[in-house]
Amino acid sequence: MSETSPIIIWFRRDLRLTDHPALHAACDSGRPVIPVYIHDDLVADLRAAPKWRLGLGVGAFDDALREKSSRLVLRKGNAIEVLRKLIADTGAGAVYWSRLYDPQSTKRDTEIKEALKDDGIDAKSFGGHLMFEPWTVETQAGGYYKVYTPFWNAVKNKGVDAPLSAPTSIKAPETWPQSDDLDSWNMGAAMDRGADVVRPFVQLGEKAAQSRLGAFMARGVGDYKQTRDIPGVDGTSNLSENLSLGEISPHQCWHAGQRALEDGKQGAETFLKELVWREFAYHLMHHSPRILTDNWREEWAEFPWNEDERRAEVKAWKQGRTGEPFVDAAMRELYITGRMHNRGRMIVASYLTKHLMCHWKIGLHWFEDCLIDWDPASNAMGWQWSAGSGPDATPYFRVFNPETQLDKFDKNRDYTSRWIAEGRSNPHEDALRYFDAIPRRWNISPGDPYPEKIISLDEGRERALDSYKNRNF
Image (tube, one colour):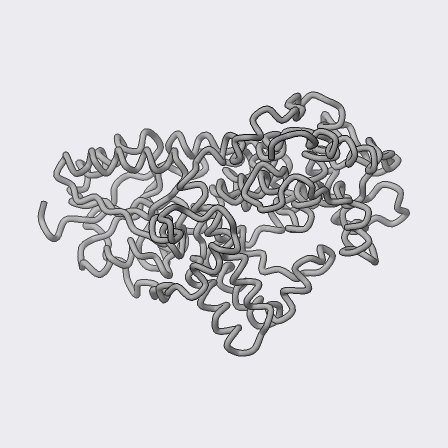
């Protein structure tokens, strides 16, 4: 292949121009660059909200590329077949991409790299989705960290690469290959009418992500340690939506947090710890991929969780009609915004897996369907941490009480009044959006009475603790 032949950049969950090592290397080569997005089986298998949000992100990224006199070539099909066809059509001599770490992506990418190299194509993978590659952080004994705090201590002073600048220009090929029309992929089909409800809450694309980070560092990070647990105030960065699709890099967030810490903004350390919590989830997924599908703690294999999603209490939980205002408000926030406050995530997960004794997989799959910030590693670790089957030094006897948690973190009921309409003479407009977002078959209206509790909290807690007794945890 000629040194002037194009380089294909295969974009996935890295929809940005700034701090993109693969794109940076391609542009530095001086060769033409062909940005590509492939709708393969892994994309097809995404659930409703993540797939819809990805479609929006792909469209926004194409717009950003066009501002650089480039564009995003869209193709649908088996990834290696698509890449080989593009190489044949364009004469490309190299394919670059950013690494992913879930087992399906790792398997696909390894096979593709080997196949392309056999074809005589320069195939390279780059970092960028994580600050610390999973194979670079080890315990003194040589294994991987299984508890967060030692992991944090191991990486907190580890160097994080400075973010790379966006390319000033992206050299175009002489002729652009044919591209699919994004609308023809119909990536929002499963969202139905929910898309119109959630769309106003989306902060789309790299520019929005950087604005989000800047605003948080200017006004929010100082009090983050206190405000991050108060769901009724805007006290978090909200960057999970953009990090999940790589519209901003963790390196950018880390260095912004470090600057804030140097400026005396004490909440910045807590923000840095949350970034490392995300890293910890990815390291666990890389080293023990069973966390995505099975109990991370293997001794939980025989725990008697309910796995029947048709049961009435599961339906009530999904609908946000358990009779527990904190649980119900959080579930409704999810349907209206596509996201859920972190305190709410812990409450609804504990309630489902402990008070209702339902398997964490039920919750994991429901979040996978509903979250626009869905992330495979964080979702799995969060659910298993809450259920007790995951990485935590004191897992099983932590049972969050939704009532006392509400009194502690939503004293004035700002959060619940924003998201729950029933029983209120003048409900918040956001609470009313819930009835526009949910499936019509649920047959729920604002005039319905607020439901009674589906289980006594004391009864649910005691039932859970009884189940834990005499088990070898």
